[in-house]
Image (cartoon, rainbow, N blue to C red; front, top):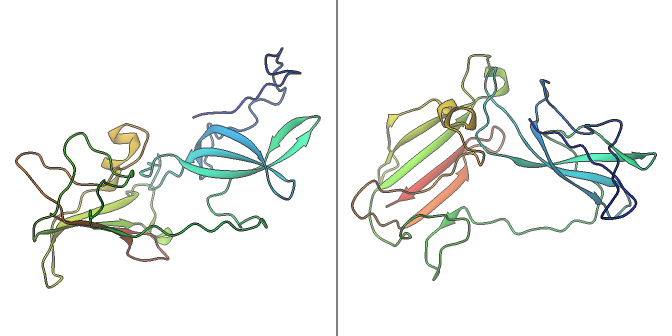
Amino acid sequence: MVSEPPPRGPAPDGPFEPCPANPVLSHRSTDRPIQNTGHADLVEAPDGSWWMVLLGVRPGGGAPGRHVLGRGTFLAPVTWDDGRPVVGEPAPVMEAPAWPPHPVATPPVRDDFDADRPHPRWISVRSRPAPAGPIRLRIDVLAALPADRHPRKEPDVLRLGVEAADGAFDVPAEPDGRYLSTEVSGGFTGRVIGMYAASGTVRFDWFDYEPLDHDTGPGQVILAP
């Protein structure tokens, strides 16, 4: 768990004094839906309001919760009291502030690896993908619906299999998602989905990542090696 205790001072080199209300942002020892809050920045919005941009995680499944997406970015409203920030509650879902929109193009769900270099989102410790192959490997991420959540239930299920040309899906394994959570596997970036060959040479034609259902959020990954 991380907390934010901002000191203040008359100059960049101090002297600094702590805030008597420290920590101004902490979800330690609580059951709030956003945990591990911290690494925050204060920003002033176009309308003059103040906000805190921070990192946090959203544990899923039963207690203790397990998170699988790494640390996400959240906004929390900020007011000021005697020159010190008072931080409101970051929420998993919030209404967009009434600021001028700056739309960003939606990235494509498919990568055909046709560019001279792979996109920066790809990470690798060895050689990069290259075209070839008729086999389609597929991963479905099945998140639990709110009505189905239970203290002893996993945060999601990973359905691993091979998809035939006619769309038939052979599923040899459906591992419990908690075993690929940060709390069990370690690390702090969440799951990294990609392609890997344990031996020999494998060439990948394309990679596809898209939601299966917009309302419930499970996703689907298809690899064509």
